[in-house]
Length: 314
Image (tube, rainbow, N blue to C red):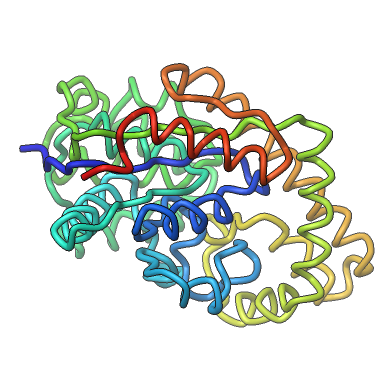
């Protein structure tokens, strides 16, 4: 059953496009609370590396689902969506406006379109499968091919996270994940939504990506990379794919000069932003896109858009 909320604002967009600043401005204008929809900003160990809002920004309005999980305990899109729906319901019951913001498109899809209703996987089985997949190395893809041939045909052999997910679902439920994915999904949340996607000029965004990564290094990203390295986590974990983390870790062991690590981190960020742009352009065609780079102008446009939808009125 879907949760009904009176009104909410959803803000998607590529990294460094100004989503967090917009969410804060809207929260202050509408009497809202911010809900994170960025898979990397869930991790408590990497505030700087994942460009989470600062402690000062978080103190201005309530923020939810930031830094809520450990780097070795990733949240799937489905689990995040369940948590986000719960938080949105609590915000709405307080008479405030949920403002969901982030760059993980699949999270938004899970929230407003729904995902296949796959039963929960027993923790012991999940640990067993993930250990088996890690031990199998390059042979892990064969485990998935045996459990779910249709899914295996769509997953790269190097994607151990998705391989493990396919194997654990098949073993836990006796039914391949590829079959579960054919079950019609049910949205977790419905209501009056302002669906906004920021799509700035590419050259402007690339410059923002470069400047932000350099600033992150100045503000403590290298220290966070050192702390992550000390955890000795499985390199296949999603947290280990944080933008710029591996180049900075490479610098820490002497494999790269700091300037080289920064350049590599900037390149990773630009490439990821480009992939996000493509995803949002092709998968979020029903969302309202805003292209202006000037923050004052874009805020005025978006405020007007929200006023026209009637979201400023409960």
